Length: 311
Image (cartoon, rainbow, N blue to C red; front, side):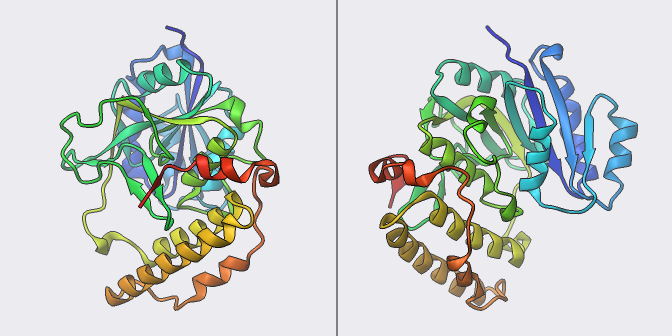
């Protein structure tokens, strides 16, 4: 097997404790030690993460940002300082299986049209599935395949999906050369990984699930763990993604359906006392967006075909 050089990129903000769990397994992964590097981008943490990394993990390359700039920018900084043919993105609250990386590389190397690959993401506390890749509904909802299901090998096939979260995402360097950026810096956090995969597919590459690659991710135990600002940013970034990745008339059609779904979501979160922003999120329908690719050159049929549409 060929072992391309891989840059493992971990963006982290105030997660010193989790870095102590995430990084040690990376030193023991089933991949040649001289064929990967580990980069941590400390996103302006105030919990002493940078000093902790310098003392405890001298084999890790650490880049510290002066202020909290968001996961999208932190990951882009990691890319700018990486030398790999591949970038493997992990969240700092993830513990990768020993074979997580090598299994992704096996799948990615099998087809030059594969642009990104994703791991099976499992809860760290009960081993239930978080996602085996995502589909996108016509109403803009991300459908996480297998979410909350017990893993009994029902997702054991290598197959194409719409997108993956960046808590276990492998990307080829060559595709980034065709984009203005990888992760949209305006997003700050949330949906930036789905937007990235979306553009990968618009460029004609595949997003493929690697069933034998597994990462264990800190799960959300209840809706009380979800912050209001997180919901707001997810809705805002979703609107931006539909504005960027479709052109007229598809853009207007889908934005109408997505807006209706967001409105229903606002009503739901309002009843749970988790929404404090009124209808202000809809002003982002009129924001200027930086597309990252020239969407005018992508035929409308292609814009539709890249979606794994599910009702």
